[in-house]
Amino acid sequence: MRPLAILPSILAADLAHIGEAVRDAMAAGGDIVHIDVMDGHFVPNISFGQDTVRAIRNVTDRRLDVHLMIAPVDCYIESFAAAGSDVITVHPEAGPHLHRSLALIRQLGKKAGVALNPATPVATIEHVLDDIDLVLVMSVDPGFGGQAFIPASIEKLNILRAMTASRDIEIEVDGGITAETAGAVAAAGANWLVAGSAVFKGGPAAYAGNIAAIRKSAERARGELV
Ligand code: DX5
Ligand code: ZN
Image 1 (tube, rainbow, N blue to C red):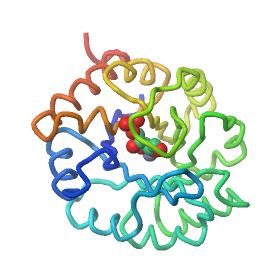
Image 2: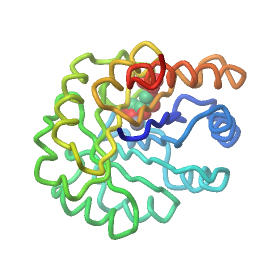
Image 3: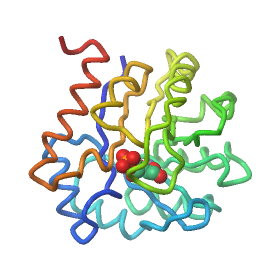
């Protein structure tokens, strides 16, 4: 089974204190930092840029999972790589040549991911399976934290698990992940669980309990807990 990871999404952190939030969330049991980059064009919200990624790179040794919700995307991949991203994920709708975007990410020595919006079919990645390290299933429409989980994501995860069996591809899920939904997505094959609101709610003193609750649900669903 692919190793389980919990990825705090810093979009939900106190943005006046991003560095502390990253350090605290990682010390509280987070595995990988998820950074949502939004341009107010591809999605109806604006968030972080390369300088934010670089600033976060300077406060943690953990992997940085950078989710690009920007179009065009190709012209920015190199600068996000240089800023210290470890994984760079693009949406297929954000550029004309998905294969070319993925090749560029790998050429830059980074892991390449494809994000599938709720209405984007899994077949979109059928012919680039050799070119990706990760597939991200959006379980909400991208753009905002704190939205409700879309149940149809479960079927999508099941299909992707079959499609990527025996390949070294992480299956990530992003949007509406809580202790309540983590079990179902883990049971359907997701092993990278992004969570924003469910990690950062209640402030720093609550992070460890919040992350543990998500992890326990996922571990139970994976048969790792009794
Ligand atoms: C949404 C982002 C998510 C967001 C998830 O466009 O991609 O990463 O931070 O937030 P929650 O976990 O609150 O749904
Ligand atoms: Zn995201």
